[in-house]
Image 1: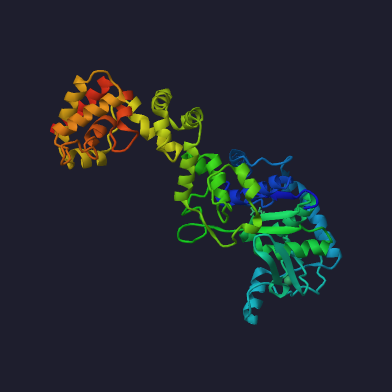
Image 2: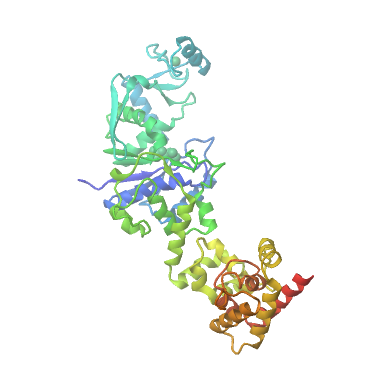
Length: 468
Ligand code: GLU
Ligand code: ZN
C-alpha cells in the first residue's frame, strides 16, 4: 500500500450498536491498525425521521467498550449537507441529474403497464423540468459499473438494471447514497468496508463519484451477512443483536472482538482464541468468506469461558464485581475465586455459584431438591451419616471434609463391589442441602468456606424438611 489507508465506520444512530455493525466496525479498525492507517467515524444522522441523537452515546460507548478507538473527532453528516447540495447542483449542471415530477403512483402504474420490473423508467429525463417539481434523479448512463471487492473479488453491475435513482427528495434533502458517497470522497476514504446489505448501492455510489469526477475508493469490502441457526438474517425481534446486551450478560470485550473476528474468517494456524492484537497481524480481508456467517452463541460462550479462565485472579474478581449484589457476595467470591473462575462461561453466572456462601439460607432450587432429595437414592441416610462424620471431624479443611463424606457414603450404602465409596452420586444430598443447588464449585472447598456451623445447620434443616 503506497499511502496509509483511510477507513471509516458510518453508523446511523437509529438504534443500538448491532453485532453486525460491530463486525464491520472491527474489520475497519483492524484494517487501519494493520496498515498504519486512520480509522474515522462518521455519524450518518441526516435521516431526521429515523435518527435518534440520544442513541449516539450508546453506540460510541459500545465501540469504546470493544476497544475500537477511532482517530480524530467523529464527523456528523448533518454538518455536511451543504456539500451534498453542492454535489447535486454540479450533477444537475453537467446533465447527470434531472428533476422529476412523477408521483410514486404514476411510476408504479407505468411499471405495471410495461409489465417489466418495478422501478422508475426515466420518464422525465428530457422534459427539462425546473427545481421544485419533485425529486432530483441521477441519469444512469449505459455501460457497466464494476469495482474491486476485497471480499467478493471483481463485482460488476449492468447499468441497465439500475433505475434513475433519487439524489434529492422533493423537499431538497439529500438521499443516503449521495451523502454517503460525497462524504467518503471528502474524507479521503480509501477502503470502504461495510455490510453486504450495501452491495446493491455500491454501483450507484460509484456512478455518483465518477460523474462528479471525484476520487473513488481504491477498493470495497462487503462483509458477510450474519445469520442465526435457521440461516436467517439476525433480527432484533428473534435474536440478541445489541452489543450492549452481551456486555450486560457478562461477556468480556476481549472475547467479543475475538469472536466477531472469527465470523467469516479463521486464523491460518487454527488458534482461534487469542488477543485481538495478534489477529490484527493475521487478518486479511481477502481471506474473509463472503457467504453468510452463523452467529453462534454457543461458540461465543466457549470463547468467553476461555477468556475468563485466562484472566489474572484479581482481574477476574474485579470484572465479576458489578455482577454481584453486594460486598458480602464479593467476599464470598474471593473465598472461592479460582474455583469459580474455572467453571463460568459468563460473568453473570458467578452470582449463582457463590450465593450459598453469603445468603443466610441456601437458595433452594426446587428441581434439584426434587431430583436429589425426593427421588434420589438414600438421601436421608446420607444426610444423617454426613452430619455424624462432620460433627466428629477434627479440624475443618477440604481434605478432612472429603474423607468424612467418603466415610458417610459407605455408611449410607453408596459402595462399589470392592467396598470402597461410590462417590459419583453420594455427595449430591450434601451439596443440595448446603448450597441449594446440584451444581456449583467443588463441594469440599465450598464447605470449607461455608464453615462447620453453617454446614451442620443446613444439613439439619434439610433433614427436617425431608422428614416433614
Ligand atoms: N449508515 C450506513 C449504515 O448504517 C453506513 C453505510 C456505509 O458504511 O457505507 O448502514
Ligand atoms: Zn419523472
